[in-house]
Length: 102
Image (cartoon, rainbow, N blue to C red):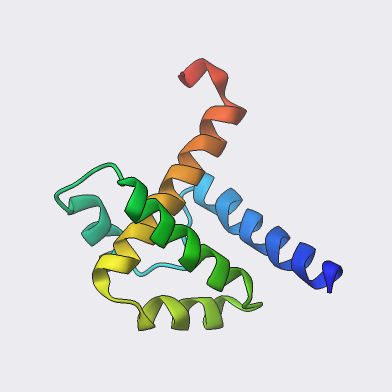
């Protein structure tokens, strides 16, 4: 069971690594555009909690197709919360790797 969990975490970290290179296989371009153009730029603590719950649900799925299906089942608002949280993780990873950008 622990091995499966580590495998799922590794795949999620891979998605974050891909995001640092500008590739987001989980999201359609329209989703990214909608999330970036929504009225609020930062997430409230309530929105962060919702994004975390979605992230935990995504961890349970192995394939990108299943993860994408889960994202399709969300409301656009929930999906925007998750996308913003995910982009924040990508941004943090980029800043960790390139401290000169701080």
